[in-house]
Image (cartoon, rainbow, N blue to C red; front, side, top):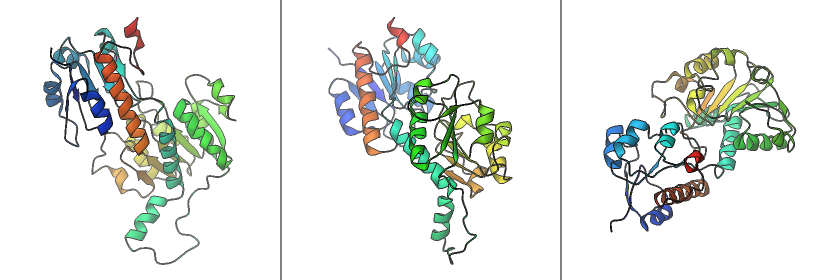
Length: 326
């Protein structure tokens, strides 16, 4: 009897891959870049399970073309906006993701971006490497104080809460905005639930920690940026399209806000001619918020378990569409 088949769209930690191959015939896409859509489809035809990344678009037409034997889609990420969940549910396919494990790592990265943007770390480091550090000067590289400032968090989920928790050491006032009030978090940390306009106008630092959907696409546009302080710092460690990137460039260029720290962009990778790359007051890193050894290893393990459970007809340990089990 032939073994089940799976396609894995990028290399993962070896121990997770060994776990999969102990039970499944698995092919792994070997390149650093994702497989082109037509290649991805051909590789997935006839497989029982797919382990994918955010860069792999999977919709209903794709699922139809792969075939009715497809039992599971396991995403190695928390987000899943690249997968059309209603179609997966209609096909009876559970979709797994890797939440919680990267919460602390991502919150750490958001703070790294906040501090780097506030204190002009990237700009200063580039100056040193370019040989432009000539002397200490009382007016050079002046940034924004973090201690005692106001932190605004848009999206008070697990990651947003951990970003807030880290502010305790900086004695910050914390504001947050969400579609619903998160009283369970308010009971654990001093924070104020406010509307987004109040948050934008009163915060010295704004951290985006919300999901990407139709209501949050370009949530931070020219109008929203115009409500922020001219010294404020925007941090995005969620999804690139939450920010209108052209509007952000203009706001940074014109001094409408002070600085930005971005782990994500729209598109990814950012285009080499994107005007944001010309600005000294914008720190951009290549979507590395979850990039610690321990976190990525555990993400690989969870994705592997989800893949195997789905292929065997068992419940996924983390499923974004549990209605498939009803």
